[in-house]
Length: 471
Image 1 (cartoon, rainbow, N blue to C red):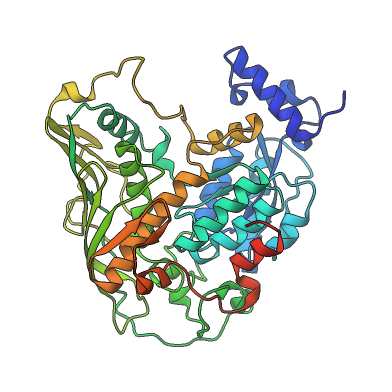
Image 2: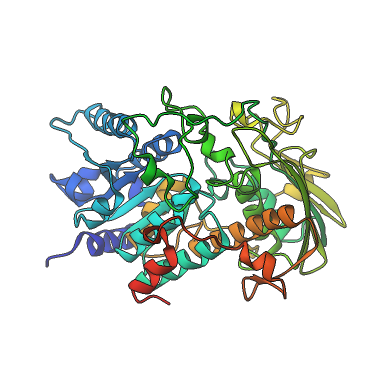
């Protein structure tokens, strides 16, 4: 019988699970034969910067996948991505290793040999690249937040479900590695270990102003800046608002520039809100009301919010509070005790700043008011899907043709909550959110901020869906 690569992987994964063996513990030779590289899940890396390099290495760590191509608008980063991939496979003893290079993601999606893409581009590009990939029938790993705004999250979800592809969001706190505290904490809360949940307090760090006034610069020859802007408003090039030209590891300025990312509320907020909503059992819902305030950076290269205070009321009379004075992490408070979870000694990146106590190396990643709260759950407890490694979970989901641990529907809801909080920061008045309709109640001004008009029609995700016949 002749199998397509996808059907072969699916049947192989099913057989492996049936005998209690996961695909990652089977050698590529025994699983696929002598021509193993061509029969693995063929992956292209789109975006070769700081997170792109981390993502591609995470995927290459597993024999179920083969990274065959890289794509970036910056030729320096593209060359570095190609080198990283080729050196990885050459280091495993392979000869004649070659990763294809693309400067336009559309060319990646047009390639029939590619089964899946990893989307590690700036936030304002997530929706267009991921939606285009879904419509092209490619499986997707996309960094969090899943999209830049609320309307985009709905559009991407429609595309993924219409084309029946597998999407994993980079909400790595759902998987055991490398941050093991969040799963047991949220499972304990979900199963009533602290009694009725009353309050969730979340610290997401604090961005610091750069101290530099905006100043236009000459666009470097290696960067297609007009294309990089995408849907964002027209503006002059400034390295401090894009990414470092002399470093692949430095924190990019776009992440602190509101035209490209909304700041800590979606940067770290997407991680922690995601865990909080799962712990509440509201991963497909959201808050009922939002009250927020924040101060925004002024006369600076960067433009996102700095200090913040957000209060959200959820069904079940649960209050969620975010404040820049809280420790980085999530504190669940119930009638019978509390649980705190964080990334422990894993710091926020150096230029992220912190909420004061965040970076204490002595801080435990998982704490509770009573050790019994964190004792082993019984077999009837509500649990997360097993996932030791976030990238492997995605690859296994592709092979088995099932949703991964961080699917599009739940990721869209996490983004919507964070973006709604940002809208509250902007309007600084109480807002009422209808989670079922994914819109604010009787509030045209707030609803207008769920989306933005793209700079050029070619960057309009809604038109992309319409042209594809997806409504």
